[in-house]
Length: 431
Picture 1 (cartoon, rainbow, N blue to C red):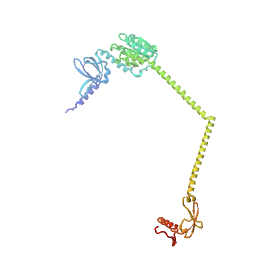
Picture 2: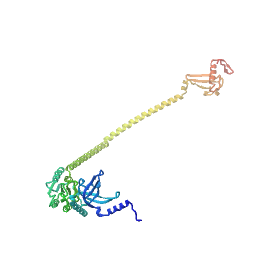
Picture 3: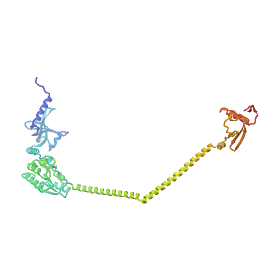
Picture 4: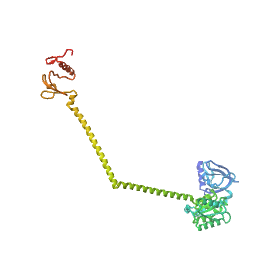
């Protein structure tokens, strides 16, 4: 059985065949627009038809710059792009890159052919582009002397910098002899030595702008030693000189703004620099004055007179501190002395006697601190606060803390003068 392929495989194979075909990768097809729809995504879907058939077409949003007009059903157009297969549906369609009205189709083909040729020669390369000077003195203009373009250039240049000299070469920009006139103007202004040159005109159809698509004009701009700004037509118009020129401006007015620096901004920049310099000088002077005052204060501080004054003040401070320290030492010593006096008073026997205590000693002047040191009939000397008492021992008894009351009771009984019984005082029965 022969090999069986899926639908996707066949569609992929056919897509590869379309991709490898050089003719289909870059082709121009003319026809009438039908079923034209502008999608919200920015894509344009339409059909291209003639009396023999129709073809599905799409222009993606990224290629919309290749469409310079509002396309509608019934327009006779020439569509440039590539033919390829949409694999999902298995249908081929034209992927449009650029669309022009059919009336200008022949000239447009010549335009594309010359553009391709000059691009291959490297005339569009960025390496050959000259920078536009920021500030110029002489501006050269190659354009028609009576058109709106030259007036726009004069107005913008005069507003931005009235000191710039404008030299106009009144060239033909349309019709027979236009390309020769433009080339002559470019060469004359280049030899004259202008700082920047503007080459352009107002808008128009492709036929009106064709002089700026001529190879002679492109080569004259490429060989020009002076930086050239192209300003041909409106923003949507593109010519060969736009690719060759050092800088493209969408309109003549924009070209004048690019060529002539704004003197007001320059003057403002100078004023900013002046203010900045003035502030810098003022800050420097202020800083130096601060340093001078610092040195003056330092010199004043280090002078002999100030040093003597400082030393005297230091000695006075030391004297005050010494006097305060001595007073504090005396005060602390007096406090310590008072404390010692109070302690001595607390230890003084006289102070104890004044508090009601007494001092007892025997006839040998030994202190009596225990009943074991005495016996009955011994004589004791009792020292009180205001004198001395001699007493005979009549009774002793060793008692604990619990029996001290009984001892005191018996002592009170003896103190009443009652007779002794067996060496003891006889107390009342009631006691």
